[in-house]
Length: 611
Image (cartoon, rainbow, N blue to C red):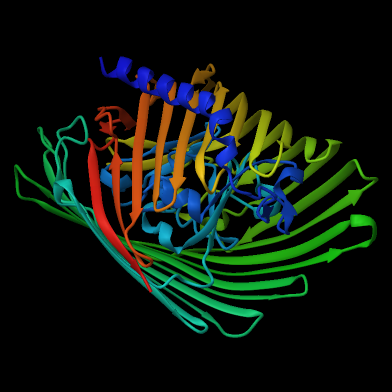
């Protein structure tokens, strides 16, 4: 019955959107889609001219989702699949909620202002309040040539606000939900704080798991030292508490702390960023039957420097060279620290032959030193991109590129003795068409195919009582399509669809196995927005179908969200956000031990005051 309700809801949304276009076009104000993006090329370029499948979520789009954190907002991104363990995208310590791009669960590289946030393969998007974000640029497809290891599925670049909004916000909801936040800007100094908490949510997994929390404290600050130099810092403190039932019933508490520091210099095409990222996790697990306490802790630290120089040459040509260095440290509980040095040099050259044809060549050389047991890797990867202008604001593009991913330090540490954990490499092919019809309508379509050799994957070892790592092969071929109408006034909407066939193949007792289905084939996303005078509202839906999770066929999921805001005064507004408005019990993820479900219907109602 719930499945029928979900399909009916999707049909109603789609029908309403398609029939409303002509009726409300007259109400549209001028809206500029000529967005400048930086992530796909590492320098500013019009989105319609970029030879990659891209999506930009600006402040307005993020706010329209009513999301508390970035993970909740990205659920509705085109072609993205969201996996979560607990309420509001809560993680289970090292088992963090993640965004799957084009069927590659381990290939999402998350950047903050172009600097990698990934630590030990995790990125905790639930730690990032949407209030801190100016825009998010999403690049689907292998991006390792320009950004290095881990971008085998795509890149999510979070660009934070340089000038903060002066505001205070408070909200409460069901199941003990609370949210309090605020920020202020005084000349070059900005500070923000956000506190969120969820009470008890029962039966969020098939093992009878009850969640108490999560509870998050987030601090961030920025200081514009001068026109060229910017310092930013962020600290997140997250507590997770969950209780499982059954023969091995446990009461588990996890405490995760993250820090992110950046000092960025930007002047006349030269950029230099020094950064520091760390992650500390503590875990207490009590076996309820015996009262036995198990404690675990680990620390991860990354220090890095990224340098880049861009030249705008004659006739529209662009040249770029860069280098980066990252020092990694991983310290398991009561064990010696593991470390590794990562080096890369990269370059690209964009040649504009005439008004219609542009060719871009990119290459990167990467290598590591100082890894445990001399387990070092080296890789050279390249990419060719071609763009042909069919008409004004209509571009056809083709891209062929390589990707790679070095094993993480913790993966090397936990690999079974005698196993040969290899770095993964891939080949990616894409053909796409981008068109901006006018100032408010745009369409995108892309055909893609890739194959990743030696994809690094986690397997839970019952005897070992932890995850170990091994290689498998991964491939996928598919199509993505998007169409949107954006408006400052009246109705706007977005529609996207993606269909593909992700498959994996692993070694079984030394023999290469058959290709087997993995993850989802079908993604349908729809969003409807309305704004008039003092009132604004948004309705979002994300349907994921034909799914396989942990080698089992999985029923489709339909995530829905509604958000509304009313401007009572010049500075004050009230808002309501409702998640999972159909109250579906869909599976969000399946591990070897349990199924995890999306949170039942929940809401937040609150006030915001700007000054």
